[in-house]
Structures are given as C-alpha cells and as structure tokens.
Amino acid sequence: MNSRPVLDCQIAILGYGPVGATLANLLGAAGLDVLVIERDTEVFAQPRAIHFDGETMRVFETLGLRSAVEAISRPGMKGMHFMNAADEVLLVRAGTGLDGPHGCANNHYFHQPHLESVLRAGLERYPNVRVLHGMEAIAIETSEIGATIDLQSAKDDETRRLNTQWLVGCDGARSITRRVIGTPVDDLGLHQPWLVFDVILERDPGLPDYTIQRCDPARPMTICCVTERRRRWEVMLMPGDDPRSIVRPENVWPLIERWVTPADAHLERSAVYTFHSVLAREWRSGPLLIAGDAAHQTPPFLGQGLCAGIRDAANLAWKLERVARGTAPATLLDTYASERKPHVQAFIDLAVQLGDIIQTTDVQQAAERDRRFLAGDAKVFEFPSPALGAGLHTGPSGGVLFPQPRLADGVRLDQRVGYGFAVIADPTFLADTPAPVVENWQRRWADAGATWITDPGPAILQWLTEHDTRAAIIRPDRYVLGTATTSDTLNTLGGMMLAGIET
Image (tube, rainbow, N blue to C red; front, side, top):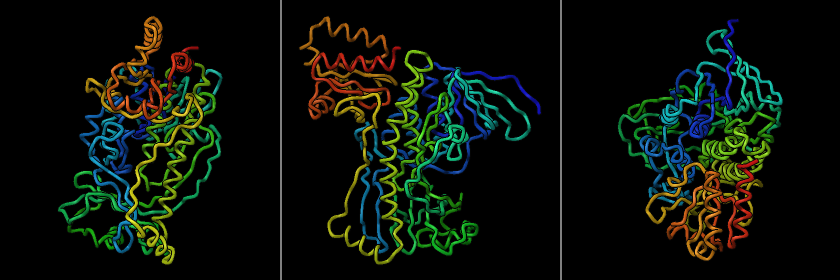
C-alpha cells in the first residue's frame, strides 16, 4: 500500500450528504478546523430525498443559503392528500405557499442533487473547511484525546490516517461510526419494501400539483409532484412481486399507466427500497457522534427523514463548537442525544401510524378505515412540533421551537440573531428593571455572543403573552432555553445559557 502523511483536524465529518454538508457549513461559519470525508468524487446524480419542512429552511437561512435553496425548490402549496381507491379524500396534510410560523412555507419539494450542490458551494466560503473526496473510513480507533481514522481510496490502495478531536458520522444507514460506537438499534415497527421510481415529464398529462397517498388495498401507492417536470411514484410491493424484476421499465410502466405513459415521460430511476423505522440507542461514545440516517431512519410517509438529520446538525453544531473551543465541558454533548432522540421518535411514530393507514391491504379493514374517515369532513392535520427531550432547557416552554416572525423593523428574527443565543424581552419588562441591571445583562451576554432583541414586534409580543411570560432565551437551534417573568428568573436562565458556554 502507498501511504500518505497523517492528516489532523479539530472536527472530522464522515459523509458529505445534506446532513454532513449542513453540519460542515455551521462549523465552518464558526471558524473551526473541519475536514469532511466523502467516498464519492461527485454529487450523487440520482434523486433521493424530495421534501423538507419550514424548520429545515430556517437552518438553510441561518447558513445564508435561503435564496439559493429557494431557487432550486418549490413550496408545497396544496399539501398531501390521503385518498382511497375510489379517489375520496380521507385525510389532508395542510400546505400553503404563504409564510408560516417559520417565516417561510411549511413544506418544500426539491431534487437532492441540486440541494447538495448548493450546500457544497456554501462551503467554498470557508477556507477552514477541507473536503477529502474519494476516500472512505475502513477503521476507527478512539483515545482520551480524540479519534484516529484509517482512510482508503475508493479506487485504489492509497491510504491515509486522520487524527481528530471529534468525529461525527453522517455516514448513512450502514454507518461505520455507529458500528464502532457499538450501540444497539431499536426497531420501531415498520419494515416494508417499496418500489421507488422517478420520471421527467416530456408533456403534461394532467397530473395533480400536490402529493397523493393512494390508500388502495390492491396496491398502496404515493404520487409526488417534485419540482418542474419531475414526478415520483412509490409503489408498495405485494405478495408475489419479484424485487429484482419489478424495477424493469416493462414492469414499471403498467403500474402507473393510469397517470402517465412512456409517451408522456422518461424514466430516470427505478429501485426497490425497504422503508425502515429504527433508532440508535446511543449517539455518542467519547469523541464519536452520529447524525442523520446513522442515528435514525424514518418511513417517508411524513417526509421527515432529511429534516430529522438537519435538526441533528443544528442541535449538535453549536454544542460541538463550544466543547471544541474548550468554553463548555464535554458533558454538554450528552444533551444532544437526550434532546434529539425523543423528538425524532415522535416523528417516526407518526410516520408509522400514517404508514398503517396507507399500507392497509385487507379489503375489509380498508373499508372500515374509509368509513371512519368519511364519516365527517376530511381531517386536516399540521406537522407536529414536539418539544425536545431532557437537556439544556427548563420550564413549561423550555425545549419548544420558537417561531420566526418579523421584528418591529421588518427583519426576520433568524436574520438578526444568526447561529447564536438570543434574549428576547418585552420592552415593558426592561423598563421595569433597573437600568444598571439591564446594562449588566446586555454586556455580559453580548460578550458570550448572545443577541438582545428589544424590538420584538407584535407577533413575538403575542407569543410572550400566550406563554404568560415577559422574556425568553432562545438557543442557536431556535428552541427555547426558558422563559422569565422576573429579573431573578432571567438571571437564572442567563446562568444556564452561560453554563453551556463558559467552563
């Protein structure tokens, strides 16, 4: 073997998909020394994930990439319709093109190679972030001071060794990082093979401009309007289907001839995937952490697989920055899994429940399902917004996602704050507090990188009123650290915030 010199970095990221690239952008903006390792030499050209939500767009906005992402995506204005075999609407996931609680549309559709290109272009802003293409990890060892990774070229026998203080495995469902951590994976109850194929329309055959979950017991199916001329079908495999032959074009087209034919479109990709619902028990061991599909897999019925990984990156990056700089103890990283695991499980559980509705193949059970849903108007449901699990937050509103309205000057909240803490106070609360106290708060917390918002505007004032409070501290990932009605409580929260920043 031909060996190369040893590489060193503060933080290594295995995997350059959307989760790894988002994490690298956040850490790169913080000025950390980051090395991303990716087996492939180019963006994988085939379509994969196609949906993200408003919270995810807020992360892209924090990266300074909102406009670029908006240019390659579209808002899901009409939501998702669950329909039975008779084309009757059973259930609707709401959608709108208007700005929702996150300051943008609540659902967006995209072509993953386009998103990855935007995220990778974003990294070009940071000379402190390096990307090593064409290499994969073949062995990982840990010590008291970090991790050592042996890398091998995907094309030849070239090897390298990397020393890093921290390693984050964004390396997918077959994660080597997770295997080295040695954590069990809990099965949450869904493993079902589906045929997934994507087409590019040559002409418009009159397809709907929204997503349909076709709850037909004879053949459950999903029909997705992606972007521009792209459409996706996901078809549940039934008993007797051969996974090897069903992907052939001559077998694919008859399944969807009601909607589209080879005269209307050309087939871009056809593959069989097993939709899983699994959750790793441990997300950290010493200097090793996992994120995205390495930590959890979500059935696609809610479109939350990629979103969960982006939330992982947003939760982890600010904690990892402070620990890597030595301004917070390593125990801060323990709050990463304790907060994220219950949150992602809530989405997985809901996706499994929706899967049970869609995947019903018993005719009598499907008829009973239809009767139950059709007894009244079609039920409309919004995306859930669960609170974080136990971690760095407190009180009844602690761990709740804070909205993004515009401030009094018209600027969106996240634009003002950036990827840092924010202290948001009702102006009357500050007026009722002695000026020297307020000045001390602002000086101390500004030194720690927190942004004071003293012109919150009517939407935030309404939020404070609804939550029976006068001030709130918001974390870099936009979740509430805690709320306060007195100066003593705000001082306590400031101590909590600083505990995650100062040793």
